[in-house]
Amino acid sequence: MATDNTTRNSTDDTTSTATGTSAITAWFLGRLPDAWTSTAAPEISIDREEITVLVTVPAPALPDDASDADRAEAVMGRISGFREDTREQRMSIAREAEHRFERKVAWGVTIGDRTQLFTHLAVPVMTRLRQPERMVLDTLVAANVARSRADALAWCVRLVGQNTDDWLSGLRGAIEEVERLRAAGPVSS
Image (cartoon, rainbow, N blue to C red; front, side, top):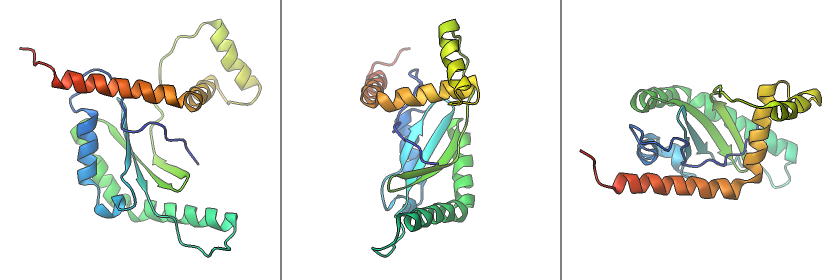
C-alpha cells in the first residue's frame, strides 16, 4: 500500500498539550536505534490520537538490468524483513511512548517512493452534513468509488490533501509558529 505522507512533524491540536510536538519528536529522535536513522531522519507525524513514525530504509541492491517487477518485489521483501526483524523493539518503544505521551504509536517504512504503514488507527470522526454533502458521498458510493459514506468521506479528505498540499503546509507552519510563540510567552499565575 503506497501512501502519501504529507504530514511531517505537525499536530492538529492547537491547544497546549501536556507534551508538545517538538518534545515528542525529540524523544523519538533520541530513542530510536541509530541503525534505524542512519539512512535518513525519521518522519514523525503527530495528532491528538496517534504518533506515526516512518523509518527510511535503504533500497536493496539489485543488478542494473533488474526488471521493475523484481525491484518492487525486493522492496516489499526489505519492508517485510524490517517489519518482522524489528517487531519486538518497535513494540517496546511504542509502549514507552504510549505511556509517556498518551497517544498510540503507528510505524511505517519508506524505501524510495514507496511507503508502507504497518499499524495505524482509523479514528471515527463525528460530522454533521446537510443533504447536498450527503448526496455527494452517496454518489461516490453509488459509483463504486467508495464502499460506504465513511469511505467516501475519507476519499474526499485524501483528495483535498493531495490537491492543496502547499496551502496545508503553510497552515501547519502557521500553527507551529503559534505554538512556539505561546511557549515563549509569559507564564500566567
